[in-house]
Length: 269
Image (cartoon, rainbow, N blue to C red; front, side):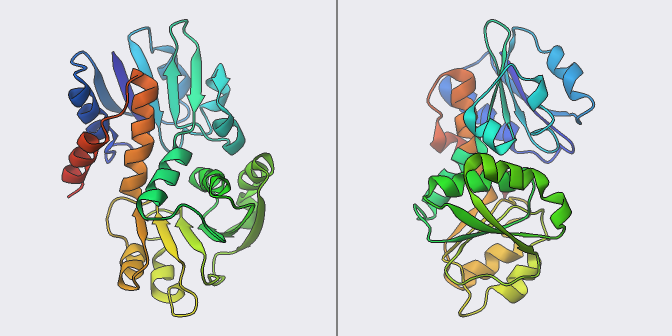
């Protein structure tokens, strides 16, 4: 069986390391997993070329939204967040879409000791931020502050918030952090460096940080949080756990988490 991760750019992806390690640990000798460069324009043709020897696809930027019209069935989280990062090809040829980023975030936070939150701030308003809203809802929150550079580009986030039943306080990216928040950074590498320099100050420290970046690691934000004794969940933790859910969806077998963690940790060094 075949599987792959699609996106653009994709050469940096560690998903093949994770999935290949899982197949080896599960004894799935006939399975393969590759990385394929693919943008939104190429996605329909590529998916049409996936025959019965394909188990599924992992999707990263910029495909999590673009894939939705190409699916026959979408799980509730993918529908509510407007982002599917997983496609499963059913035996009848139907294409099922799932969002495993939410479960990945929840597990990554749990690994850092975060099982609940009193309040939260999200940096960024893209697809990963929409999944972060769903993860926060799972932690018991009904609202979150979201800091953005351009309010005009937050329409998809606000629509997802309404579907999720979450209230969003949209603020400028330059606004300060409220003390005690869970801070989730969904912005690209380097974009949260300002927070490492100015926001993590006594009196305004978050009680935990999740930075979805995994390369380079640790980010400036993560380093500042660690110096302050704040629990940190990394993008590598998120990547591991969302991939574990994908493995289970694609193979129907429990994910070998320890083997996957060992492989991706070694590859990320």
